[in-house]
Image 1 (cartoon, rainbow, N blue to C red):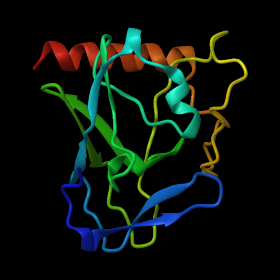
Image 2 (cartoon, rainbow, N blue to C red):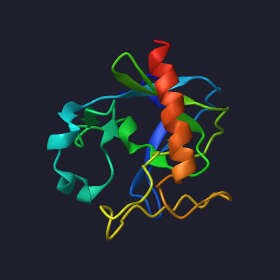
Image 3 (cartoon, helix red, strand yellow):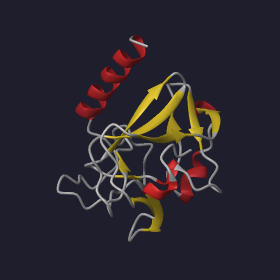
Image 4 (cartoon, helix red, strand yellow):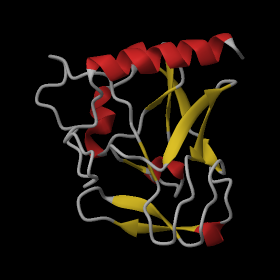
Amino acid sequence: MFYIDKSYYQIKKTKNKGRGVFCKKEIKAKTIIGEYTGTKVKIAEYDLNKDKEGLYLIFLNDKYAIYPDLTKTDVHLINHSCEPNCWIVNHGGKVYFFALRNIKIGEELTISYLLPPKDENCNPCTHDCYCGSKKCTGTMHQSKENFKKWQRFQEKLIKNT
């Protein structure tokens, strides 16, 4: 669910990524954009075929994830970028999106999907990146090195809450 007022964003079609969320009024750094809501599912029992229409599953922890209600216009429409202007914080069993920096009018709100490194289970891989940023890696998968850093960061965050 969006926490920012509707006057701050609009949903528009993008060239290669379906719909996206775009800034209508400047959003200040550290602003909480919203909470990722939906049905809590056990990852081990999740049917990956649900993701054929798009990548919507977001992880809560090693056991559970959230699958959004795709009939709603919500933060699940925030697309991936290799150079995101928003970030994800997992806190108290909830997933929040917040602005990393000031986001200018007309900019698309983006996060890094933080997909684990590509392996044999992702074949053929459909997680190509179309963000167009200068740092685009061409994939939504993290490198093994960055994935390990992200896991260490998450472990510290969980330990300190």
